[in-house]
Amino acid sequence: MKRITKRVKWMACLLLLCHALQAQTLRTFTMNVTEKGEATLTVFLPQKPTGRAIFVIPGGGYAQTSIKNATQWVPMMNRRGIAMCFLKYRMPHGNRNLPLSDAVKAMQMIREHAKQWEINPVDIGIWGNSAGGHLATTLVTHPTFNVHPAFQILFYPVITMGDKGVHKGSQTNFLGKDANNKQVQEEFSSDKHVTRETPPAIIFASANDEAVPVVTNGMAYFKAMAESGCDVSLHVYPTGGHGWGYATKLPFHQEMVRELGSWLNNIRPAVQNSALNLKRIGVIGDSYVRNHRRPYTETWHYKLAKKYGMEYLNFGRNGNCIAMDRDRFGEAMYTRYKQMPDDLDYLLVIAGHNDAALLDSIGGIKKYIEKLDLFLKGLKAKYPKAKIMFYSPWICKNYQGSNREQVIQATAQECKKFNVPFFNAASNHTIKAEDDAFRKIYFQSPEDEAHLNSKGHDLFLPVAEKFFLEHLK
Image 1: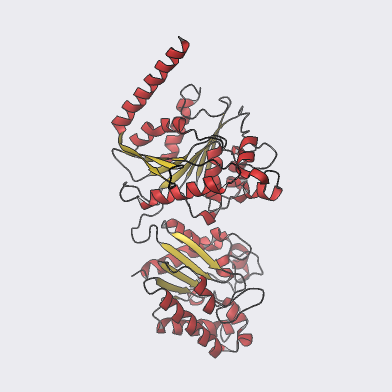
Image 2: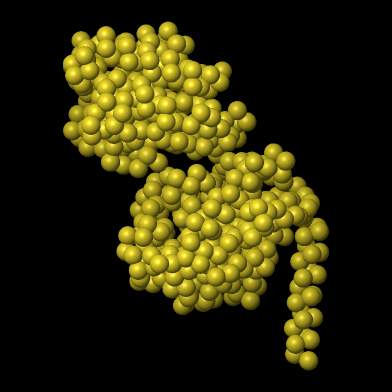
């Protein structure tokens, strides 16, 4: 009798959900993420779309995927005009590349269908429950995956892969034979890889969660984001345990729903520009591009790409020259560019600093011009349809008559010859690298005359962005 009663209750809940979906959902369908359908993406499109979408990665300790509980959020989100996309991913069984590749592919699919599904490709958030929160934050905090969601929603997320406070099942299943490898543990502990550019997040958890302790997981991620200057909100309820999701039995259900809705109302998407969204932008250069000892996610060019929803590729190399190979710092740019992919839509060159410093070793200004000519000619041939732009080094002390002035002037002439827009950062003078007081605030160290800190990149971004947008056509 009890079994029949439970079945009736479940069927009643299912009917209520179906009714709610019919009222708010335009259509729902499932697509294969992998060729044989081991991984799938189930999509719920709203009747009245706002352009926002959320990519949901359910939990399950990397042993199963709990999609059923996650879909209880669909009526609320579809009612708000938000498309919901749920990933059923492959279990790692020690091969973490399986769920990672499924999640990357699923996000690509959402962006590829953005126009058809009436989704703004730069207003797609990521949502992770429990182990799904670990998979979501791993993608978010590792830019090499090129996922770049607009925001994060995390419910009782697994964050750490270290031994203290870890969800042991997730650690074992995800890391496999590397479960006790300290270096791998740190690589996949998401709180260790937060930067200032990590997207906004809201985190929900319970203080009495014994499965995924909030102190070493959700709170650790909150602390890392707050210390990095990111937008983050943390809501820890005194009771609830683990895995409550949308369950109305949670004593704080109404507060939680209200807080999430209010937070979503205050998240603003990146700029929707059909000319730039989903385009590929590459940046080649020296440590101005690689960002020396700081993450390149702090650079103005990365922030520009993120703002307009572009796929960003960084080809910077510390110590690199346009015109001369260097043993420690690699092949010169005038030949190294051949290693870059052929399908870039935009290419920024930010270089010349090291060439100016080593001009005599290069063979003088004539030899620099000779190699720069080969470089620009090669770029034009490799990227006949791409828009190429060149940004010069900053001004320096004793600039007039210096090697840097010679290099910048010669570069301007060569760019004019090849019809490459050239931004003279030395004459623009937004970045006053010759000023000791300015460098203390905006450079990576007071003695550094080349490498901006995050604040310096933020200062230069509007100027660089204006030039970029003016020369798109």
